[in-house]
Structures are given as C-alpha cells and as structure tokens.
Length: 308
Ligand code: FO1
Image (tube, rainbow, N blue to C red; front, side, top):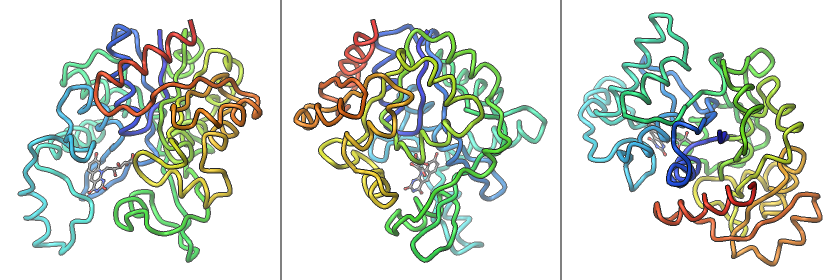
C-alpha cells in the first residue's frame, strides 16, 4: 500500500503518475482541506475536487482546477445579484458542490461524501480528507489583516506579502478514520510536490500525523515543489521567503528533514544536492516537472524505486 500526502494540482499530477505504476486500489491519498470554503451556501473542497477531476481525466487542462469544457451560466446569473464572482464555479463543477453540501446536511461526514464522489467518477484510489472536522487555513497579510485562504489565493491573487499562516481548528481536528492506520501500514509514503506551508502544512497540523511520519521517516519520500528556486504553480516560492525560509530545495529539505528520509529534486537543482544532504536528508536527482502523464509516470517509477 502506498500513501500520498496531497494538496492540489501538483499532487493530482503525482497521483496520475503513481496510478501508472501501482494498482490504484492500493493507493491512499490523504488530502488537504485547509483550502475548503463555504460560498453561496455550498461546501467547496478545491483540493479533493482537483484530484478527482484530474484522475478521472476530466480536469480543465488550462487551469488544472475545475472541469474541462465548462460553461459559466450560473456564475453570470449570480453576478446579477451579488455583483461579484471572484471565485469562479463552473456549471458542471457546481453539481459536485451541490451534492457534497446536500450529503453533509444529511449528516454524512466529509470522508464518506468524498468516497462517494470518487466512486461516481470511477476512481479506485482511496481518497480521504485529512480530517472530517473543520480545519481552515488563515493567512495574515502584510497590512496585518487575517484573511481566509481563498481570499488570499484567489480574491487577492496571492499578490500580497504573507506575514503568517495558521490552521484554524488544528487544536481539535481529529484525523479522518483510517488516516493514521494508512500511514502506519504504507510501504511507502510520498509527500507530493505541493506547497509545504499551505498544502502539506494543514495535514501535519492534524493530531498524530507528524508523529507517525517521524516514526516512519525511513519510508517517507518527499518531492520538492520548488524547481530552480521557483514554484511551478502558485506562490510557494514567495511564501517560503516571506515566512523566513529559503525558497530553494535546501529550504524544502529543512522543512521536511524530520519527517522524510529522501527529498527528490529536479535535474535543474543537481548542484544543490550537497546542500540538501547537509540538512540531514537523502537526495535524489531526477526530472520532476510533470508536463504530461508520461513524465508523471517516469517520476513515479523513480520515487517508488527509491524506496524499494
Ligand atoms: N482558482 C483561481 O485562481 N480562481 C478561481 O476562480 C478558482 C475557482 C475554483 C473553483 C473550484 C475549485 O475546486 C477550485 C478553484 N480554484 C480557483 C482553485 C483553488 O482556489 C486553488 O487552486 C487551490 O485551493 C490551491 O490548491
């Protein structure tokens, strides 16, 4: 069994690769919910949906999130009343949020609903939200205001500096059923190339998860989301710098050295291999940019090969 700690687009691509190497039914993805939001009365889980749509081959190839061939009639209609539509929900995508919200209102928990959504898209991968409890990423921006994650990421287009990040609810959020067991039993645990602060950070904030990773460190392999000092997608590079970390593979190594035994870095960063190893973590150099499913499959083969 393989376990993957997953954020959004980078994790979805990593899972596409891993599914070419491992039977999907033997894979568990533990997914970030810190990005979740309630909007227009709907519960939206962006990282879960990005993974579902990507693995189903239905994601919007241009954005990486949302569905391909979308129409936006509901958004246009909504704009008549609200005058704003900063968080774009396509007509097809809306069906997912309506289903999730309805099932949650009926009393189902998020893990159950996520399994139902994954099954409806024909997925065999075991997709599990890290927690069924409310856990929300909050970002304090440079003027001192604390905003919800999607306010920072989408409404403000992550163009403002970040002072600090916290995960509201992390003092009480319990791991979803099966999460700790999956981490304890996994042959290999992969930390996907997701933002270490706001995508993997919320997973590590849930009770017991960091501890189990520390005890299984020799089975944990992380893939750097930073290549040649920059994030492939999103603000991870700036956010690392703004929060006092190095926006290099060595900076990522420092964040993961207690919970992972190997960091996979891109060929472009080969010269930084010794700097990674000086952080006390092994280093594996290979192409990590998953520009297509073939590249994702090659990376997955290297990652799984490294852990036997
Ligand atoms: N990202 C945007 O940049 N703009 C959007 O309007 C937007 C809408 C959206 C709707 C549903 C969904 O599942 C994701 C959506 N995203 C949007 C992506 C999302 O905000 C981020 O990519 C993730 O939260 C970061 O992993």
